[in-house]
Length: 454
Ligand code: MG
Image (tube, rainbow, N blue to C red; front, side, top):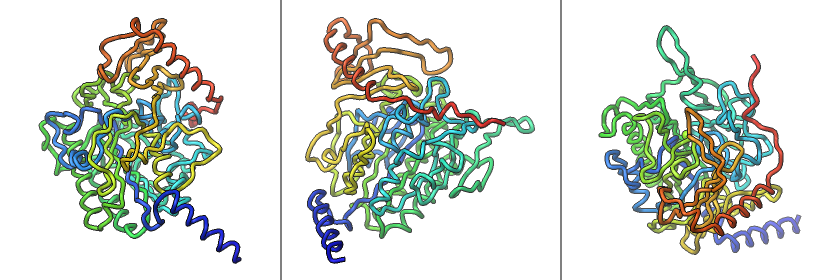
């Protein structure tokens, strides 16, 4: 007994020294994930007619990341990467033709994966997933079975294959779920941003004296677009702008609540998007701003997204140009919460905690641009080589390039000027990085091709 108490005392003392913080100082974590919000769709990233004063304030008071990437350019694999810190190809959450999970899917995030929520629970965190899940809609795959104490939201996308025609009217047959139970079908999408926000505020209030992790994954601005009455026709950008401006309102409400509860200085808020803008939706899709590419392909606009880190008192206002990805959040949160990384898996993320407290830079030098199970492009340092290109949607024009394209992303973020002829040695270097990476992959069961047989 005495030895046990002595051991506990020593180990918590060491944890304090190593991580520089007592358990009562552990930060709360909030991820606000938008759906299909493009790199150029908020004020502080240059949009001229979408008003996002609350989101812009996160940038003024925190870190604005300009080279922040997702794990994929479409929903399910992107979310899988964020939630596990690992590339989706490592556990079968991507596919070359079935690009996302659908209401007919019987697969989902394998139980062998550790989610950020499961990881943080090891440190005593209370966890909630509010919003879009899209990592398997059968009960065994839902958030409550993946480390979340609470779930309120949609199991998959609000559009796409959920569309049905009932009495001559198009209906999106999407359920709203609380816990594991369907509570509304079809869900009234117009009030989703508002209701997610109310749920988020309630969760924050109820857990303000504990350490919590809130994963708030908005359904908007994913087509079909919707907004509440209060945001009808408020934006110069039209319906898309209305949907984004309602999310901006939501961000403002959350920050206000954190301040009122006096926990703002103890909470890291990360605001980002799951992939680039859905350009094929024309006016209903967003914008990648200066970047070329879009949701669904592997040019920058497909995977590079807005990302703001806000934590008053810890994060100093700055623009961070280091490359980072949503997969870095898992190791970063683990480090900040003093929870050791699992030893039995290959992680694709890097701990950004030194960037957050201003004592160092990101160790990430390489970004893999996956489309389905294949790597189409690789960034190393300032250079990016495209080995395969393909149109995002519609007529699929796939080109496996004998002569890869090479762009200097610092000089040419819009990927306009091919430098392949000037720097053949850089292409060889990137090929080697890719070869080494591919050697770390193993054959796994594919989750996207599992279909419910009716
Ligand atoms: Mg998306």
